[in-house]
Image 1 (cartoon, rainbow, N blue to C red):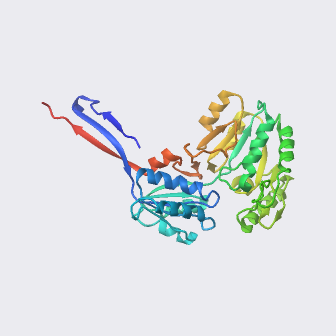
Image 2: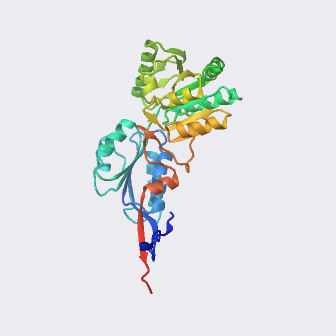
Image 3: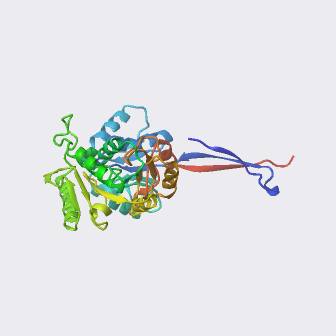
Length: 360
């Protein structure tokens, strides 16, 4: 981590003073990670804690605990001091233990918005970092030259991991001049996706995490269709397997538009102007990331200035993320940022030092 030397003699009465600050570990941390990236998202919390010297307790998702347990086994072979870490695989009911204990100075939670904000409300005085969900949008402007590239990226963003990603593409906003062409290409690409056993290399659409979750999202699709939305492809379910689904003309008050789908379903929407597109992106209680396809640099700048999200991805879908970038959202999508340096900052506090040089 870094610090800074500061000149404090900004007025005559401050003559002879100088200062410096550094970052110190915040103290024992509490981590709760989700099921969808069980190794990577646990590492996003564990590695920065080790780097800054914070002991931690980690609760991995009860359905996918093995990645965090394996990391714990590796750490147990190092010379870390006793008590430096604990990996505790327990049910969601045990999350209170990670939340209310005042000995823990920070809670870092990745998961659903409902659970995350509820935990924050019970955290008391401790610092809280929340990486929650979203209904991420991608915008395709009329000046997009390579529509096939945009289609390939959008389909990947909407349906990889069967859509079970907090930055999966859920809202596809297309300029009216290219809407029909893009719609046809998106449908044609979606129907080619192979579904089945995820252990088979050719499979792209596998089962959702549970039949309950698949049934929930299938219900949203059926409700959207009953309200006037049109199913362009997909829309059927067999147990936990939900087909990759595209819809259009879905009323904006439907759960499929308003809530986090967290599954293989996306909604097509049409816009006329760039200002309209930005307003449509912002018409959400979430704000994690947005993707934009445009060749106009000034539109890029406007999106960066005006989109109410934690990050704007140009020439790609909102589903892009690498481990060292600042990652997180606004509004109901969370607090704070992950990414190695940024998580390290959250896990530390600034400690200042002021030095007075007496007159000679």
